[in-house]
Image (cartoon, rainbow, N blue to C red; front, side):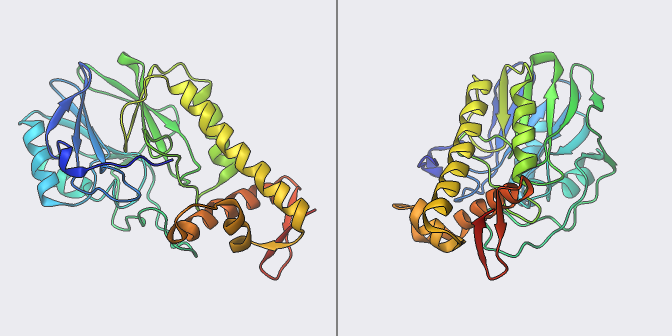
Length: 292
């Protein structure tokens, strides 16, 4: 569940040191899907890595350059290519000479109401990191952890020296992640969540929201929420038979602002596609879904 916030109370553009190796700069793009804004992370003390450079906003790029303070930038890494995460990579690369490294490019138009940012069609990485591949600076080591689900190209980055994980939008510190077909995949998302649950990371640094100090507990809770929603869908279809998604949403999201029902429908669709893949539900061909 999202938490209310007042962007005026937040230190947009200021470098906040979160640990000996991790600093954070908040972009000035608060919204319903970015919460307080996109958080760009600076990793290292002498030679830096920049994670999720954020939107192509001159004020944000100037704030990042001030935070970098003339230190060499080893790499600019992107967890995925939604437009609140990767567009600043190109201008920041031009300003620092650092290569853009990280997730694969991906541009996709989906067929429903957007519940998050659109894809960055201009993203052109100099190098794509594979799962388990590492990148090092003078005092840091980052390892790519493939976490498809929110998007098919999503990567997290593990900071080996501090037992930390930069989770992008896969796990956020304020709300559950959006899984919107056709690229968002609920089965892949749940498998990626299980992968994180099995890891020993001590802290998560999400792109939106506060650091997560007990990450395994949060991951278990998020997985439980998804399983509860799946059960709710199955029970609805047991009671009502073949139904359209808007009918399910109106029943299951009572009390939720109707303006959010379109986005909720994307989540329900993601669950239904997953249930179809497991032989539990199926589309009827006329816009409705039913149990098999």
